[in-house]
Length: 546
Image: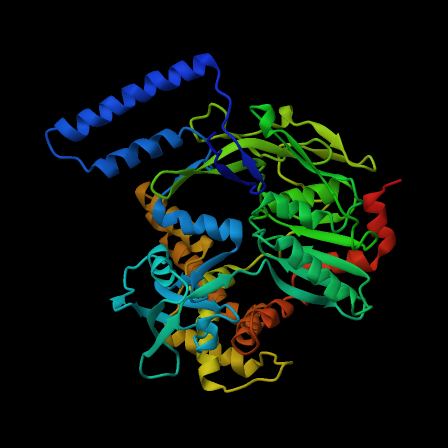
């Protein structure tokens, strides 16, 4: 008897086995069209006037076929299989450097603690200029990551440029098994009030254990009176880890999530199987438009069970479950097989891909249904998880947005760290540092265009086109007024600029945890969550309105 292949279910999560049932009509169509497709492919490869690339031709056919379905059903080539391992296992063979592109340079965002890159002294802000003898000019992040990753025990040579160091620095880094953390911060957002804060980044293998450990760490202080779990930047991961996380807070036996698909084998109900470790702890979950998949399972379940107040903006709305099906030659197919439903019975899937040629449409309001939480509060399907209390992030000025796009705070922090060996833990950005930052921006020839300038340019062109030449004096006056506004923007927005600079500079000396903690006094959504947990009558009124 043949052993059935094991599939990894992403929703990412659980293990399942077996093949999908196929009725007689589908089976006939499958065989018929497979033979037609195979014959066309064979004729093209062997007889087309110009020799086609057989592999490229097949890949084009595969991708064209999958484009007709939802965007989560994808073919995973051999080179991309490492990413599936990272999603499902939370680990990979590499040197432990988180990298990104800033100003067309590949830079180190952060070395991962305990890895070769961290131990051997690679720093945040280092610019990677060469890897394994190859220049990184024009190299994509995917190319670089593929070169950095490999079998544990092997080595990779890296050359970086560092602010304040005249010559490039070469590192010979040893690849090892790198395990990504699911929880990036555990501490108190308001120590005096006992309001804990956990930043939860992903749902890879071990996420439930990490969150349990984080909660128990806060409980051991004997100060924990309320908890904020931050899922705003969490794109999801494994379904079974979402179940593990949720059951830390809900009564044993509670339905957490269910899945329903085309066949009975895709239907399953997941319940809490163990007593909660924090059954009565007041809880707020922060969500945003990046919160997706497994992160929506947790926030939706805690909302439906009236176990937490959800604060923020509506989530992404991914309520589809995928399985990863192994294919020949170390390739895979990630395929949607079912939808998941929160305890109230609602689907949070925001886009309907059924028969829409891959594009999908948003669920219209007329088709949305109302469900109720355990305490009878109304919730709706078809829009992701909508927060119980809306709280939007503080709006960035056009100057701040432009500085972020140019990674100005990031690169100035590199220069600052190169000129200053140390800073105190209670470091703040002084007026002198802000003046120095402004001078640095001038040296870097920093410029930006506002939305108003773009609009004025368009209006000017239309006026000229329509013969309104007499308006040019007025247009020039408007331009001068806009330039004057931009010249004083640094001074008018100095408080916000100081906050951004402080976070980046603290990260150079004390790491990511210090950077996160520095945001507590000005992050509007965290502040709203803390204030609610300090006002327990208001908190309880949301969960059980009279």
